[in-house]
Length: 312
Ligand SMILES: C[S@@+](CC[C@H](N)C(=O)[O-])C[C@H]1O[C@@H](n2cnc3c(N)ncnc32)[C@H](O)[C@@H]1O
Image (cartoon, rainbow, N blue to C red; front, side, top):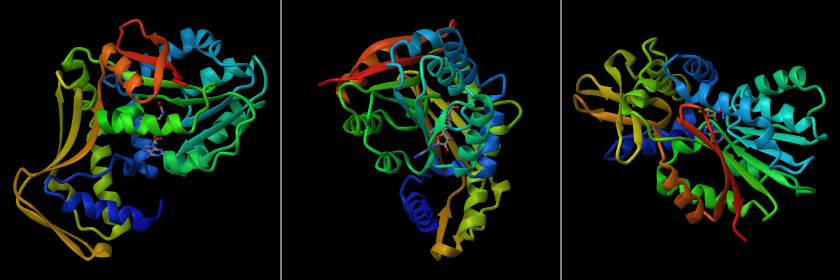
């Protein structure tokens, strides 16, 4: 990702009638560390739920892969959870692991950790945007298992998720598999609390993107004048985070040579975290060219990792 791509996306998002910023830009060095802090909060149940699935059912999940299958992980982050599965898979033979992430900083951290945790692992990190990085993969010699964990897919609206998954299907042969994590619909209060932690890390995570615009694009956002506002619609399953302008104000971004006007109470959509029902997932799989082969949930039924097979 280049600064000019970042600038173009910011210009497009803040210039839109309903302002938005792409969540892919959250992850600079400070964003990475704030996200790790969010994962450690008591309210952010997603990490514990998926960790429980992988640590108690990792053996059964890995049995679905062929021994030696190559693992490609999209949006790998710091790899703490994936480590459990990779360790199980490594017991059945050597394989190559290609973590993909837009944050080079996260990949450096992950690579350093994996070398210590799993010294026998061959690791080929690729820094870049999901689909651009997939274009850099060498041709397959054996089965490939694509992993997309942590409910990263929830950052797409359902129609965009379908398009994205159909694009992933385009990189796969019928022998390949997709292991994908989804956050499930549940008590709306539990969901909302996860995006509004009492320690304020989610608030800081959102404001950090304005700070990044100030630093990298010469913006003059006054962070004191924006407030974090998460909301959840239990029927559509859309959980959204906004930054709300506390007053009428104008923001100038030097590198874009553009000024953006805000009225009091105007919002910037920062992130979507879509929640699904089991029936919705069957439909999503079918529409994007897959069928659901197996599913693994935690004891609360909060989260599901599903194993998807491409339709021929
Ligand atoms: C919510 S974190 C989850 C990390 C990990 N999968 C987990 O479950 O702990 C999302 C990760 O995806 C990466 N990411 C977000 N958007 C991306 C994109 N468009 N292309 C590649 N990586 C992306 C971020 O840098 C971050 O490390």
